Image (cartoon, rainbow, N blue to C red; front, top):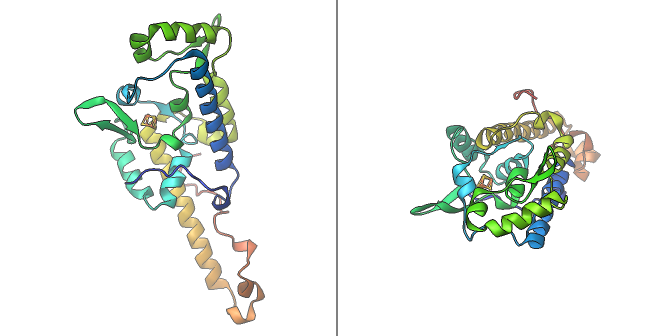
Length: 241
Ligand code: SF4
Protein backbone atom coordinates (compact mmCIF):
# COMPACT_ATOMS: atom_id res chain seq x y z
CA UNK A 1 0.00 0.00 0.00
CA UNK A 2 3.00 2.26 0.34
CA UNK A 3 3.95 4.61 3.11
CA UNK A 4 2.99 8.21 3.67
CA UNK A 5 5.63 10.43 2.20
CA UNK A 6 5.49 12.88 5.07
CA UNK A 7 6.50 15.74 2.83
CA UNK A 8 3.27 17.57 2.13
CA UNK A 9 4.05 20.56 0.00
CA UNK A 10 2.04 23.66 1.01
CA UNK A 11 2.06 24.70 -2.67
CA UNK A 12 0.01 21.65 -3.60
CA UNK A 13 -2.42 21.90 -0.67
CA UNK A 14 -5.14 24.43 -1.46
CA UNK A 15 -6.66 24.94 1.99
CA UNK A 16 -4.61 26.40 4.83
CA UNK A 17 -5.85 23.90 7.39
CA UNK A 18 -3.59 20.94 6.46
CA UNK A 19 -0.55 23.16 6.76
CA UNK A 20 -1.65 24.35 10.17
CA UNK A 21 -2.45 20.78 11.25
CA UNK A 22 1.07 19.79 10.26
CA UNK A 23 2.50 22.71 12.23
CA UNK A 24 0.58 21.80 15.39
CA UNK A 25 1.60 18.16 15.13
CA UNK A 26 5.20 19.22 14.67
CA UNK A 27 4.95 21.51 17.69
CA UNK A 28 3.80 18.58 19.85
CA UNK A 29 6.69 16.52 18.60
CA UNK A 30 9.16 19.30 19.39
CA UNK A 31 7.72 19.54 22.91
CA UNK A 32 7.99 15.80 23.59
CA UNK A 33 11.51 15.72 22.19
CA UNK A 34 12.55 18.57 24.45
CA UNK A 35 10.98 16.79 27.43
CA UNK A 36 12.81 13.58 26.54
CA UNK A 37 16.11 15.41 26.33
CA UNK A 38 15.51 17.22 29.62
CA UNK A 39 14.54 14.09 31.56
CA UNK A 40 16.51 11.37 29.77
CA UNK A 41 13.30 9.39 29.20
CA UNK A 42 13.56 7.17 26.13
CA UNK A 43 11.66 4.38 24.43
CA UNK A 44 13.54 1.07 24.25
CA UNK A 45 15.09 0.51 20.84
CA UNK A 46 12.49 -0.76 18.36
CA UNK A 47 9.69 -0.93 20.93
CA UNK A 48 6.20 -0.98 19.45
CA UNK A 49 4.31 -2.20 22.50
CA UNK A 50 1.98 0.79 22.65
CA UNK A 51 1.01 0.41 18.98
CA UNK A 52 0.64 -3.37 19.34
CA UNK A 53 -1.39 -3.44 22.55
CA UNK A 54 -3.46 -0.27 22.45
CA UNK A 55 -6.26 0.89 20.18
CA UNK A 56 -5.62 4.64 20.27
CA UNK A 57 -8.69 6.79 19.83
CA UNK A 58 -8.16 9.82 17.62
CA UNK A 59 -10.19 12.31 15.67
CA UNK A 60 -10.78 12.50 11.95
CA UNK A 61 -8.71 15.67 11.87
CA UNK A 62 -5.84 13.82 13.57
CA UNK A 63 -5.54 11.50 10.60
CA UNK A 64 -6.49 14.01 7.91
CA UNK A 65 -2.90 14.47 6.73
CA UNK A 66 -2.44 10.73 6.34
CA UNK A 67 -5.67 10.56 4.32
CA UNK A 68 -4.67 13.47 2.12
CA UNK A 69 -1.24 12.04 1.49
CA UNK A 70 -2.58 8.55 0.70
CA UNK A 71 -5.17 9.86 -1.77
CA UNK A 72 -2.60 12.11 -3.44
CA UNK A 73 -0.36 9.07 -3.95
CA UNK A 74 -3.20 6.96 -5.34
CA UNK A 75 -3.37 4.51 -2.44
CA UNK A 76 -6.37 6.07 -0.72
CA UNK A 77 -8.89 3.41 -1.76
CA UNK A 78 -6.65 0.51 -0.77
CA UNK A 79 -6.00 2.14 2.59
CA UNK A 80 -9.72 2.78 3.02
CA UNK A 81 -10.45 -0.92 2.45
CA UNK A 82 -7.80 -1.88 4.99
CA UNK A 83 -9.11 0.59 7.55
CA UNK A 84 -12.70 -0.61 7.16
CA UNK A 85 -11.68 -4.27 7.33
CA UNK A 86 -9.72 -3.55 10.51
CA UNK A 87 -12.22 -1.19 12.09
CA UNK A 88 -11.73 -2.63 15.58
CA UNK A 89 -8.31 -4.10 15.03
CA UNK A 90 -4.78 -2.88 15.64
CA UNK A 91 -3.68 0.28 13.84
CA UNK A 92 -3.17 -0.47 10.15
CA UNK A 93 0.14 1.39 10.21
CA UNK A 94 1.83 -0.82 12.77
CA UNK A 95 4.30 -3.24 11.24
CA UNK A 96 5.76 -5.71 13.71
CA UNK A 97 8.97 -7.64 13.41
CA UNK A 98 8.68 -11.32 12.55
CA UNK A 99 8.38 -13.32 15.75
CA UNK A 100 8.51 -10.20 17.94
CA UNK A 101 5.07 -8.59 17.91
CA UNK A 102 6.00 -5.94 20.45
CA UNK A 103 8.86 -4.79 18.29
CA UNK A 104 8.02 -2.91 15.18
CA UNK A 105 7.55 0.41 13.52
CA UNK A 106 4.96 2.94 12.52
CA UNK A 107 4.71 3.16 8.74
CA UNK A 108 2.95 6.54 9.04
CA UNK A 109 5.46 7.94 11.50
CA UNK A 110 5.97 11.37 9.93
CA UNK A 111 2.21 12.01 9.73
CA UNK A 112 1.00 10.18 12.82
CA UNK A 113 -1.72 11.69 15.02
CA UNK A 114 -1.30 13.89 18.05
CA UNK A 115 -1.78 11.16 20.65
CA UNK A 116 0.92 9.02 19.07
CA UNK A 117 3.36 11.94 19.30
CA UNK A 118 2.64 12.67 22.94
CA UNK A 119 2.16 9.22 24.43
CA UNK A 120 4.64 8.46 27.21
CA UNK A 121 6.09 11.95 27.23
CA UNK A 122 3.16 14.13 28.22
CA UNK A 123 1.03 14.94 31.24
CA UNK A 124 -2.63 15.19 32.09
CA UNK A 125 -4.09 17.69 34.48
CA UNK A 126 -4.71 15.89 37.75
CA UNK A 127 -6.45 17.05 40.91
CA UNK A 128 -3.23 18.36 42.39
CA UNK A 129 -1.50 19.44 39.20
CA UNK A 130 0.02 17.93 36.05
CA UNK A 131 0.65 14.18 36.20
CA UNK A 132 2.84 12.26 33.78
CA UNK A 133 0.83 9.66 31.84
CA UNK A 134 3.69 7.19 31.98
CA UNK A 135 4.11 4.32 29.57
CA UNK A 136 4.05 0.93 31.33
CA UNK A 137 7.13 -0.19 29.39
CA UNK A 138 9.00 2.89 30.60
CA UNK A 139 7.86 2.12 34.15
CA UNK A 140 9.05 -1.46 33.93
CA UNK A 141 12.36 -0.84 32.22
CA UNK A 142 13.51 2.59 33.36
CA UNK A 143 11.64 3.42 36.60
CA UNK A 144 14.35 5.87 37.67
CA UNK A 145 13.83 7.93 34.51
CA UNK A 146 10.07 7.81 34.94
CA UNK A 147 10.57 9.19 38.47
CA UNK A 148 12.61 12.07 37.03
CA UNK A 149 9.97 12.70 34.37
CA UNK A 150 7.15 12.56 36.93
CA UNK A 151 8.89 15.16 39.03
CA UNK A 152 9.41 17.37 35.98
CA UNK A 153 5.75 16.95 35.04
CA UNK A 154 4.71 18.05 38.53
CA UNK A 155 6.79 21.19 38.02
CA UNK A 156 4.80 21.85 34.85
CA UNK A 157 7.62 21.00 32.45
CA UNK A 158 5.88 18.24 30.49
CA UNK A 159 3.75 18.90 27.40
CA UNK A 160 0.07 18.71 28.28
CA UNK A 161 -2.14 16.39 26.23
CA UNK A 162 -5.12 18.70 26.64
CA UNK A 163 -3.33 21.82 25.42
CA UNK A 164 -1.89 20.26 22.29
CA UNK A 165 -5.04 18.33 21.40
CA UNK A 166 -7.37 21.26 21.98
CA UNK A 167 -5.27 23.53 19.73
CA UNK A 168 -5.64 20.95 16.98
CA UNK A 169 -9.33 20.33 17.67
CA UNK A 170 -10.01 24.05 17.50
CA UNK A 171 -9.00 24.17 13.84
CA UNK A 172 -11.99 22.11 12.82
CA UNK A 173 -14.42 21.33 15.65
CA UNK A 174 -16.68 19.28 13.38
CA UNK A 175 -13.93 16.85 12.44
CA UNK A 176 -12.65 16.80 16.03
CA UNK A 177 -15.91 16.31 17.86
CA UNK A 178 -15.61 12.53 18.18
CA UNK A 179 -12.70 10.29 19.02
CA UNK A 180 -12.77 6.88 17.42
CA UNK A 181 -10.44 3.87 17.23
CA UNK A 182 -7.74 4.96 14.83
CA UNK A 183 -8.76 2.75 11.90
CA UNK A 184 -12.35 4.01 12.08
CA UNK A 185 -11.22 7.64 12.18
CA UNK A 186 -8.94 6.91 9.25
CA UNK A 187 -11.74 5.34 7.20
CA UNK A 188 -13.86 8.46 7.67
CA UNK A 189 -10.99 10.79 6.83
CA UNK A 190 -10.23 8.79 3.69
CA UNK A 191 -13.86 8.72 2.60
CA UNK A 192 -14.03 12.48 2.98
CA UNK A 193 -10.79 13.04 1.10
CA UNK A 194 -11.69 10.63 -1.71
CA UNK A 195 -15.03 12.43 -2.09
CA UNK A 196 -13.38 15.85 -2.05
CA UNK A 197 -10.91 14.87 -4.75
CA UNK A 198 -13.61 13.20 -6.86
CA UNK A 199 -15.76 16.34 -6.73
CA UNK A 200 -12.78 18.51 -7.56
CA UNK A 201 -12.15 16.38 -10.65
CA UNK A 202 -15.81 16.50 -11.70
CA UNK A 203 -15.88 20.24 -11.26
CA UNK A 204 -12.83 20.69 -13.48
CA UNK A 205 -14.35 18.39 -16.14
CA UNK A 206 -17.68 20.27 -16.01
CA UNK A 207 -15.88 23.57 -16.43
CA UNK A 208 -14.16 22.24 -19.55
CA UNK A 209 -17.50 21.10 -21.05
CA UNK A 210 -19.12 24.48 -20.31
CA UNK A 211 -16.24 26.51 -21.65
CA UNK A 212 -16.49 28.15 -25.12
CA UNK A 213 -14.01 26.93 -27.75
CA UNK A 214 -10.51 27.66 -26.60
CA UNK A 215 -9.71 29.88 -29.59
CA UNK A 216 -12.51 32.27 -28.53
CA UNK A 217 -11.72 32.16 -24.84
CA UNK A 218 -8.85 34.34 -23.65
CA UNK A 219 -8.91 32.79 -20.21
CA UNK A 220 -8.62 29.31 -21.65
CA UNK A 221 -5.70 30.43 -23.82
CA UNK A 222 -4.08 31.81 -20.70
CA UNK A 223 -4.97 28.65 -18.83
CA UNK A 224 -6.33 30.68 -15.98
CA UNK A 225 -9.88 30.36 -14.66
CA UNK A 226 -10.06 31.08 -10.95
CA UNK A 227 -13.80 30.43 -10.92
CA UNK A 228 -13.30 26.76 -11.73
CA UNK A 229 -10.19 26.16 -9.72
CA UNK A 230 -10.25 22.52 -8.65
CA UNK A 231 -10.09 21.61 -5.00
CA UNK A 232 -12.15 24.53 -3.69
CA UNK A 233 -15.43 22.73 -3.41
CA UNK A 234 -16.40 21.87 0.17
CA UNK A 235 -16.60 18.20 1.07
CA UNK A 236 -19.87 16.52 0.17
CA UNK A 237 -22.50 15.80 2.74
CA UNK A 238 -21.78 12.09 2.44
CA UNK A 239 -20.20 12.04 5.87
CA UNK A 240 -21.90 13.42 8.91
CA UNK A 241 -20.01 16.47 10.07
S1 SF4 B 1 -0.23 5.75 13.78
FE1 SF4 B 1 1.79 4.86 14.13
S2 SF4 B 1 2.34 5.48 16.23
FE2 SF4 B 1 0.09 5.73 16.03
S3 SF4 B 1 -0.81 3.76 16.74
FE3 SF4 B 1 -0.53 3.63 14.49
S4 SF4 B 1 1.48 2.60 14.24
FE4 SF4 B 1 1.37 3.40 16.35
